[in-house]
Amino acid sequence: MSNNTKSLKKRSQLGEIWQRLTRNKAAMFGLFIFLLLIFCAIFADQIADYDTKVIAPDYDHLCEGPSADHWFGTDELGRDIFARVVHGSRISLVVGIISVSVSLLFGGFFGAIAGYYGGTIDNIIMRIMDIFLAVPSILLAMTIVAAFGTELVFVMIAIGVSGIPNFARIVRAAVMSVKDQEFVEASKAMGASNATIIFKEIIPNCLAPIIVQATLAVASAILSTSSLSFIGLGVKPPTPEWGAMLASGRDYMRDAVHLTVFPGLAIIITILALNLLGDGLRDALDPRLKQ
Image (tube, rainbow, N blue to C red; front, side):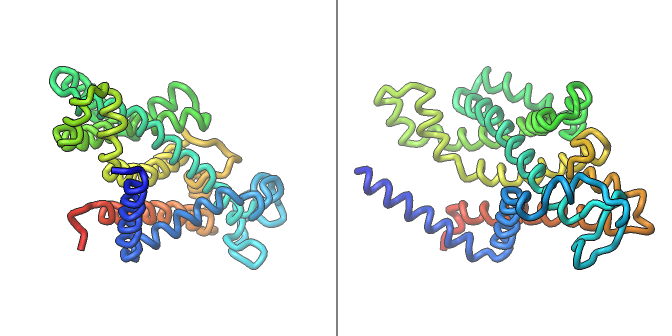
């Protein structure tokens, strides 16, 4: 098969997947919110100045409700909540993507090795993953952050490490379902190395479940980041982070409920959107759902 034919076939498959995805209104809503989150993260400095609206206190406007000047109101230090929510999207997106990348890199590698070789190697790797799974992911992340520090890099590593077993199991199952197919046998017959077969032949044919899991894992990572910050083990004030904003505003819930409502809504809508997008991608990438 020529390269042009392969390219046309690939574009046709991507077009088919996109058409099925666009028919799912819930998934398109999730995609819109996710793109909006990316837009806010990229252009946060243009939307609201970091130094004057996010960090600097304004003691003349403490705990004010939503208004034309402050769309989401102000917090206990007079800082603009809308500006802090927008800049908080940058933290959530960075932590979500990098931590999931760590999980995918290591979990995918170990899962692919276990699924391809099987036998003793599979048993050793998966029993180690079972040990990690025996510990709740948030507890494992708390332990790592408490041991090494609450800097952003350690938060990302902690959440990334806690997600490795899930990716390992998913990639292992996907590899095991593909490794006995004819194109793999053909590569072996042509003398291709095991590494070439795994990473150039098998993994590209296992991308559908991996992409879906990665989308859902970003939502889980954002929630874990907010949870760690809420209990004081995540991003430290005055850095704007949705979980930390919830923690600082909980003492004012009776008199200024907007301090917790808007950061809480940001977390809820983002998690919901990513879950809807993940469900839509699962349906769009599943060949059994073709009409």
